[in-house]
Image 1 (cartoon, rainbow, N blue to C red):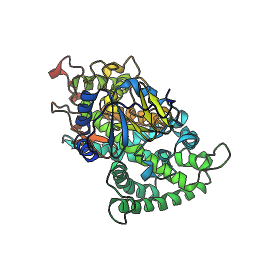
Image 2: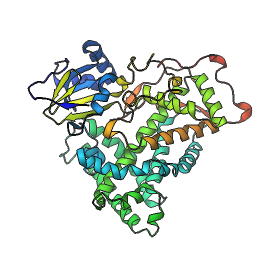
Image 3: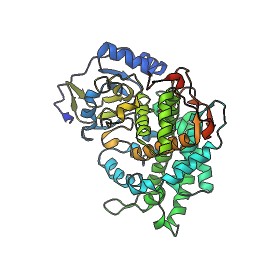
Image 4: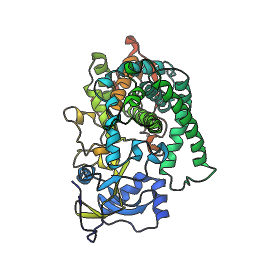
Length: 456
């Protein structure tokens, strides 16, 4: 557990003393190569001042992750940069401390337990609908296809109905999510400008707010409100412990959070899953056989391994709020960021033997560690939609495997491409699919007998 110490005992780990612009340029040119070089030079924990984080300590192994993520929010709170800057002050991404925990209690229930099971049918339905549009026998990018699919799923789960509101949000959400993600991590954006990217984002946000407020009013006056199971209906009816409801602006901000963050990260993970399994024919054969038999264990393990080796969110951070905070042998001063490099933590060979190997079997008989496998973050700020996303990814991939044959490839693995706060396959997770017919489904492992895994 992180603790507060005397302010005169600051002890920072070593790190580069290069000017901020040089560090920023190196980060933007290749974050992974840059952090890898610093880890080799300074070890798994190092300090530097890097926009947009500011003065920071970076963690690149699993040994201190639990220490940070179990620290009291009063000592280490909301990190920078925050998606709350674009999602609005009513979003959980903008809240900290007691206010964050108070809101979390209201927003978590729709994404757990019985409520989750209510979304299964629509997830399968939307997957079948989207897959019907895929070209047969022609290589195409799966990432845009999965973006459409996951947006439709989250829109229906959150809003609960088809109609004009849904159609307008379907058009508005992709550009607002993409631009908002870029603005969140940009070290150059000026929020006060009357022109440029922020001005364009404010115009889109105003359009979204008008639409959201109209939608909220419509739901509030729905005579069957109490029978509805969509997320918006639950938020409208939710009450804090003192009996107060969420304001319309808070609901609008939370809706934007769910719609934006709730589809892009899942879509990117699905694209990475296709990119990975099409390069491992023996694994793909096993997945198809399991799906046909009604099993789920190997598919679940494969998704865990995709998220370990290709996390779509690579950095989470906390801000030191106390005068100082102890972290292992280090003592971090107030105002510093502590940044967890998720992709490096999940490649820690002390936790994951042969970390470079893509091997879903490592998760068949062992669940991942809470603080070493962290694609959804951890602690009090762990993603509330993790269970929803897990269910969605499993159902989408199982439905695809049952109905379509994925072609395999010996092409090199796709590189990482930044989408602001998330990462996607650089070529879009390209694949070739054919509608399955029992007579023509071939064994993909004949040319790769015994292959079970491979390197990244």
